[in-house]
Image 1 (cartoon, helix red, strand yellow):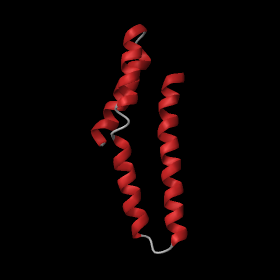
Image 2: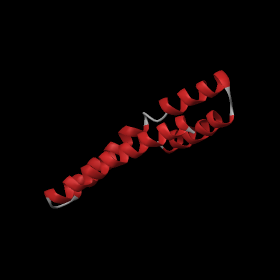
Image 3: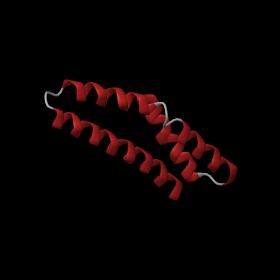
Length: 82
């Protein structure tokens, strides 16, 4: 997951500094490489939510998980708009 994250950032930068078809290529690569990271994020939050003692804290963990996914998606959209 860490390697995918690094590749996502590097290819995102390449998408920003190139033009034409290369910009599209790097943009697609950076978006596709983001998807293998999601299962690791889910696994981490699932384990953390199962370790908490109260349902309120577990619910909070799942809300944080949803916000985290929203931020990751927003990150990708921000690269597109830059």
